[in-house]
Length: 85
Image (cartoon, rainbow, N blue to C red; front, side):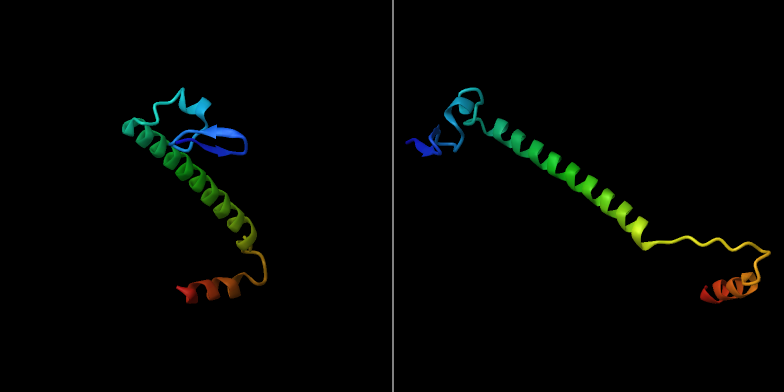
């Protein structure tokens, strides 16, 4: 039985007929391989997104401070850091 979607004829697998004629959609191994490839692409995109989010968080949430030993506040900061553990 054929379905129509937006004027394009669809096969039973839910793919356009012109595309299903090129791909063996009845083959479970082929379909599983396509699924695994899609999972790999999604995982790679998620990893890149997490990496970008971590870099963005590091840029906006962390700050650096440099206090030289000649600075009058150096003993106070050294004492405070050592009391923090």
